[in-house]
Each structure stands twice: as C-alpha cells, then as structure tokens.
Length: 443
Image (tube, rainbow, N blue to C red; front, side, top):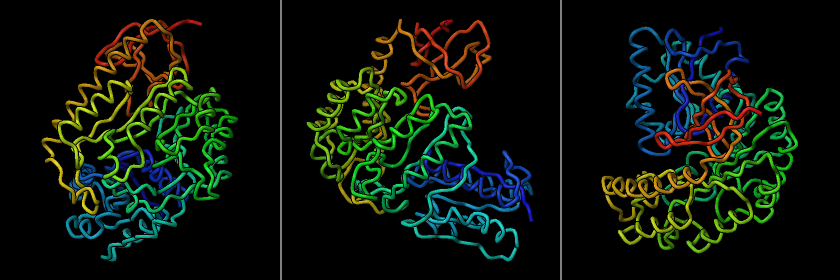
C-alpha cells in the first residue's frame, strides 16, 4: 500500500547522500515523498551521532515530530543514521514515540521498515545491518539545488583518530569501484549539475583498499572529462596527498583550487596522542608546497581546541601556526569528549575552557579572513549565481573559494535578471559582514 513519507536529514553531506538514496528507494516502491512532515504517514529522521551536540539536535527533531504525532499530524516515526547506530538501546528506551530504527548498515531496509511500522503490530522494527559490508550504491533523489551535487566515493574510515567515533559508526574504509562512480557522475552531469563535490571521510585514501594504490588522481582525471564546470574536493588527509594528486589538481582546470584538509591541531605531542600521523613540520611543508604548485589556492581546515595535552603554550602555538600559514577558512570546534573514544579517557580541560580557547582561535582566523578579503578587492571572480535576495536587492553566489553551506557567499549588484545556476563574472568591490560584495561585469 502506498504511503506519504517525509524525510528530515541532519548532519554531514555524506549523511545527506544516504537520505537521498532512501528517498529514491521509497519513491521506487510506490510511496509519495512529501516535503513537509504535517499530514504524512511516516516521517523519517536521518540523524547524525558524531558529537553529543549532534545527538541533542537529533533528539530535538524527534521530539518535534512526536508533538505532531500526538496532534494526529504524523502517524509513525522512523529514526535512521549515526545516532541510532551509536545509541540503539537508548533511542528505543528513552524515546517511546519512535516506531522503528535503522542503523547505518541498513539504509536499504527503509521500505521494509515503513511497511512494518504501518502494520500496527505493536512491534518496533530494529534493522542493524553490518556496517562494514553495507551497499553504497543506489539511485538518489537529489536534495541539493539542481546546480550542485555530492559524489560520495567511499564509506567508513580507517584513521582511528583518538577523539573520533566515526569508525564505530560507519565501519572500515571501503572505496566504491570507479566504474560505478563514473556511471553515477555521468547521470549527474546529464541532469545539469554544474558543480560536483567529491566527498568521503578521507578521499585521499580512495582505492588503496581495492588494489593497494592511491586512485583518487585517476578518478579525478576521468571525472574532468565529464560535463561539469567545477569539481570540488572534501576531505583530504594530509599525509595521503601524493605528488600525482597535486599535479592533477594543479593541471585540471575543472578542479577548483580549494582544498579542505582537516588538521585538528599543529602541536606534535597532541597530534601523536590523537593518533594523527602528521607533524607540524610536515604540515608546514605540505601547505608551502601546495601554495607553490597551485596558484590561487584557498585552504580550509578543521581545528579542535581543548584537546588532551593542550595548555596555554600549545594554544599559542596553534595561533602562531595559523598566522604563519594564513589558512583562509577554518572551522574551529571545542573538544567534545565522546563516549567510547580514547581521548575521552585522557586529561583535558572542561567544555567552558575549550569554548573560550575556540573563541580565541576564531578571532585569529577572523583577522586572516579579513586580510584575505581585502587582498582580493578589485579582482574579478567567476561566480555561480544561487539566487536573489529581495531585501538586500542583490544576487548572491559562490566563487571557487566558497563551498556550499560551510563558507560565506559573494553578494553582487545586477542590472538584469541572473538565472540561479548560471556562471557570471563579478568584480569584487567590498566586504559586508565578513562576506565579499561586488558588481556584475557584463561580458
């Protein structure tokens, strides 16, 4: 029997791809996908469970759906994703409003779970498949704007950083075979996708589990033959960036000169204790090499303050490192001691102090961003227009230097309509609330 199904996807882009696959499976089974949860038979909440704050967000969303359920606006609630994988028993015990759950190894069971909860048998289906062997392929219904889409090239992670739970939620690292990836990418290009974001927990490891060789460079060269305008890379592990990969990024014009390389910290003692394979000297050498080989490169990273072993000296070392490397984009997060990780068992500062340190690093990063923005004023940028803001009376979009959702926008004045999803040239003339502004250049 067909039902009306609504989806809420939380967390990262990799999780979003899982949700897109579930939506395609549900539609193929004859169900109707509804944008809003009100009036649906089943609402599916696809959760993140990476940090406690993500679990709290997921619980808030589930409780909102529970209110709709009590009001008769929603019949059943299914919870999927990383939080259910991590806290299966807690979800079942503490959230009686939830009618069924799927772990990260069981996204393919979504249609079966819908049928089970709608039978009103009183049973709560609990699908917890093998996270190391779960299928990765599958049709998708894109939930992004039509001009960009994600291509997830691998699942899982083998890095086992001391602060991270992802290997226990997503399993061992598994690269998708290149043939299937290229087939999916062709479909995306044929659908009119302009910007392809290549994603995985660690894209630099791609292929090493298949034949022992790094294959990201080969994959990217094949992707560049397809009809994409931009290809963007998230995330690269520092010590897996090969000379061949650097050459490919530098030589292929479709690959945007923007690299997301999470380093988390720069202090050698902290890096070693967190089971990172880098040293500060190696990171400095890598960033210098990348900037010399890839002109115009914009770097993004992730940093954690308050990690075990960080005192005031190590914090200052991180700030000096940032000023020296001038990394243009950085997400700065206070250390969250996650249950089940080795780092949580180590001595560390409390959350309030970790937040204070994060604010200090953000201040340093803000100065770097301001200097970068000032340095590009007067230049012209190719910008992907993403819409028009009626209040500001300006169009907005992104250049190669801004990735969707995590970086800012470029705002620009126009004297004609600009269709979202088209590329235009913008002369950068100013900064507004930390974001670049400019004017359309007629060609």
